[in-house]
Length: 166
Image 1 (cartoon, helix red, strand yellow):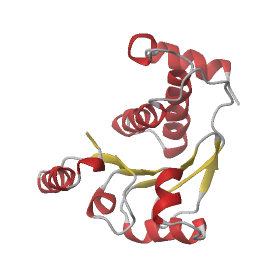
Image 2 (cartoon, helix red, strand yellow):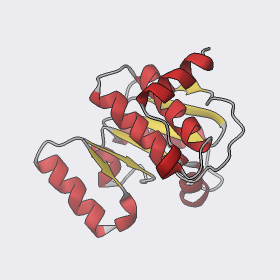
Image 3 (cartoon, one colour):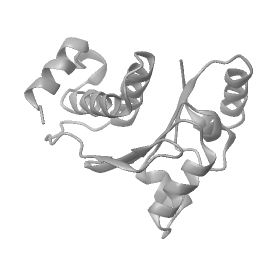
């Protein structure tokens, strides 16, 4: 599975087209609902930064519905430490409150969340389990510094989830 970053513009689009042509699933972030990369992604994660710039003052329920009407995979709207929204086309919007932590450093939170989504998809987990795991990965990364040296492994993420069981 490919983790596709849209910020490389034309090269990102080309990578998405290669993925589609070769039946390689990918997960991406911050693509508008009418973007090729969003349409074909196994999961598209939309941050508040994109929503605040691309859809300023728009009704988020309406925008989420636009994604559900045009995308094939899991759609996730993140709101920082606030409740996130997720669904698949034809489904209902579900919500998940991220783990409550006091972060040391939030750099890498989005990328680690995306990595958790990819891990869940690769393991064929249901959406709720995937979201919980991705949120735990992101939380664990926010509790470490520097992340590249101190991020927890799978056992550390599972221990975090067990400690913060809901």
